[in-house]
Length: 116
Length: 112
Image (tube, rainbow over all chains, first blue to last red; front, side):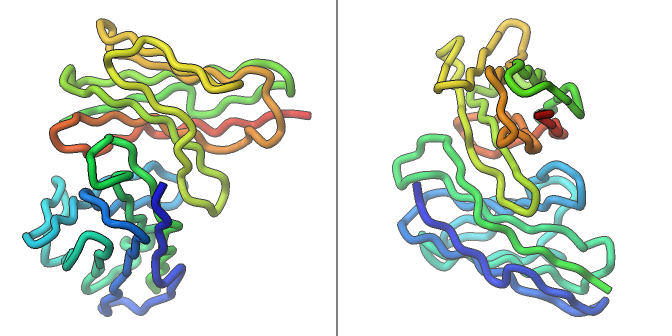
């Protein structure tokens, strides 16, 4: 499976500021996703990061709040904009395993965000 | 959209006993069903998955069964060990979009 890294691993931010989270994969992958895991909860899909086009957002998530970039097949960023304490969560990227689609998704280590 | 329900929310078993977690899904177009294990402070790790053309899959002490007609699938862990203690998530997706819908999770505690 691909090796996935995320930066930063954790951060503490002030209300009203923005944070950009990076996801780097060591091989080319077709699909990249961003999930949110609120404390003690399950994982919720934020959006599909599309290479070369705008991300596809799930219900309840909007581009102004969570802008996403995917400039190539190994890298994506998620920005959490104008943060409030309710945005305190773990943010995880995931990748579909290989360039040839197989359904299997692997997760990055996550970014633990605390908003004060 | 897809709705995945998972039961029980917590499960405590004696070491050596079996653990069973059950999930149901709503979208008949879903055809891929992975299970993830998440230890405290760690990322979800894929432990086993099953596709809709298969009814059962086994990997050592872990097995998954799928009933497409009833739209439910289950995780079975045999001969449980303390290192099996974690939160387990089931999920479902369709091959046309690969987006995972997760169950709420089951906290498994294996008592020594």
